Image (cartoon, rainbow, N blue to C red; front, top):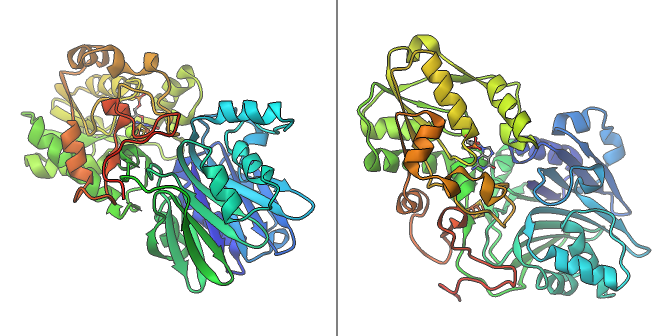
Length: 457
Ligand code: 5GP
Ligand code: SF4
Ligand code: MG
């Protein structure tokens, strides 16, 4: 998912819309904006792409100088209108809008407790639980009630909370999900990805820190800490696949990190071949890096139909396979008779690689060597990225050679864990550091909220 918030601009809803548009790749299932006119929170949201949801939107009805927005892709909760964010809660004294990226690991337990105590929840989304925890204190919405509520939830989260009076932004104690602060003139902006700042002409100011609760209001910005800050464990898949190449994630440019993944991969797993090709769009950067490091020419061997959405986001395997067919086509005149290094960013179920290898061979490729610019994914993600279950993960069930046979490649190799870390992390400090749990099986935080101990301060 992607979250966006702005405080102090008279076109808050429009800028939020543009910000969300630039983060469309983070979720295509639903989108919404809640705007604050200092009296009331007004919402416009719906299922579908940002453009579809806002096609009919009347921005004159969305007047206000602060707003929060969300693009959704569901890992928890169903695909229904109720679950589209931001979630809005009204009480006699104040309103609250909530936008969340991540996954609350103990949401089911907390939901059970809340229901036992008489709460009725409107959605099946884990996000609603936080709203109840905040309000249950009976002291209104402020730093204390939010901090207390955050201390009850575990997992990975980047939250933006908007009331008529303030905007809050919070990041989980391990900083697994991205969240940055920017400025546009006097206005403050908060977003999952820095590409949203560029989109609206804002400049990057700083990262929200792990365990930090930021409060923004007409007096400016203030910061408190609701948890001891641990070693930063930024999701490595943000770099590998999820984020836009022009974004800086935890101050590291995504395109540049992907090029370094390609370089490491070329050093670790060279191939005698005629050309390097990348699977558009997310593997082009790493393919360029591989080509540069190996001295092989980079070619455009596959083109993408830009009018088809991301395959992964389709719910069923059948739809997913259909999606790959519609989406990619080989450039026959380039690949025919050639020995090809085909770079993809990751293998989850193996659907994409299998289809593409088949496609390239049908187009006459002499050899197809698959090189994956991340380690093999063998473990589920509990932090909000849809890797699904172990049974579906091809690398959890088959060896590299077996995978090569299954997808019909001449050879397969994955980037090592050390190679990935080297491509992303400049210096190992408390500020830097990545989560690679889906590859290594070593999880930075468990459902009880216990964290890996390294580098506390
Ligand atoms: P597979 O086809 O092996 O199941 O999935 C891997 C392909 O899906 C890659 O080409 C990757 O770019 C794309 N993909 C789409 N969404 C995701 C995601 O959420 N995680 C990962 N790792 N890959 C994804
Ligand atoms: Fe990202 Fe994998 Fe960690 Fe999930 S387990 S947060 S996908 S690196
Ligand atoms: Mg891809």
